[in-house]
View (cartoon, rainbow, N blue to C red):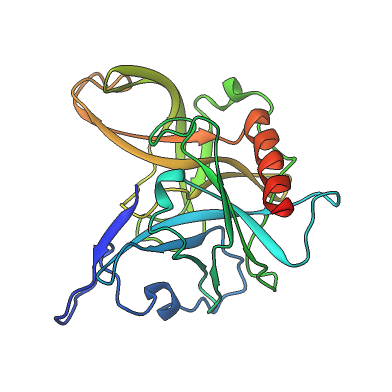
Length: 250
């Protein structure tokens, strides 16, 4: 889910999908030492509209590590507004997106709805970086497991616990096997990492793609909302490596 906000000219009250002319995330400063799990992807659509989603910064192996740039996984549908996209965190860092590579056969709302972006490296240890080579080896084992996710109000720490389920999601003209989750989520959470803490290390399990309303939920058997994710598996890790090499060669 991407939040599309129109910049108003009247006083504002707090609203998760309303963005001020100056970057709203910069108004919030985290004073605790807890590293943030996610960063904002902000794309300027026009002078009056912006798009807000999330991204996960990667920790690269030595063979791919670049001291000048960071690389982050975002949703493909979160990249809007041509080149006018920026990565922002809660410590005042603001980096323009330099390069982008979409997943092969990209289609919004499906398992190909992801992209890799590059931007000037952010210094400091306040951001969690997820190991590119620490992927989910067997997605079937994720069924009915507990994962962590950022609070629906958009704070960057993954302090919301929820559960995964592998189901057929009914989409227009098709059904897809994707993982649903019961985390609370709001527009603007697309691209947020879903994680598990394994032996003291936060591991990237997948990225949040969005939600769909269905008249017959395969989980409850009644009408409801299904929120779903793209697992960070071996195939995605391999494709991300290829995308990193492509960006580094540009």
